[in-house]
Length: 136
Image 1: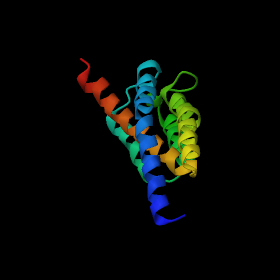
Image 2: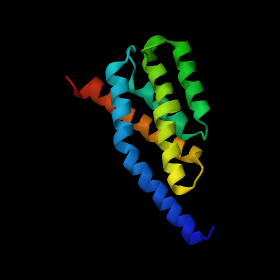
Image 3: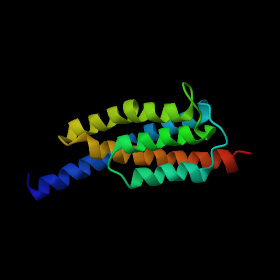
């Protein structure tokens, strides 16, 4: 692939990611608004965002979420919990969106999937901040 066509591919991927952002925001806001979890602090959610920024593995991110569930109940437990919903979104909605973008650009979906997960979690940290401090 020439450098020019590789640049075109990257631009197309970035455009696809930007177009998926409305869905990402909706999915994480819905997760935070409609699932069960305890007194989850913004800093704890930001730790998850930090993990997503320092790995190239969706499995590592899900593993961290499950670890947090094992430590305390702030993420909720079982069916209907925030932790379960985030893992399901990663495995279903976000993965499917990444695969669609990748197919349209003839690219590997995994780096796109990770970028979408990172943005999803980042929007989640913002929404949690709003829920905790802004929605009086």
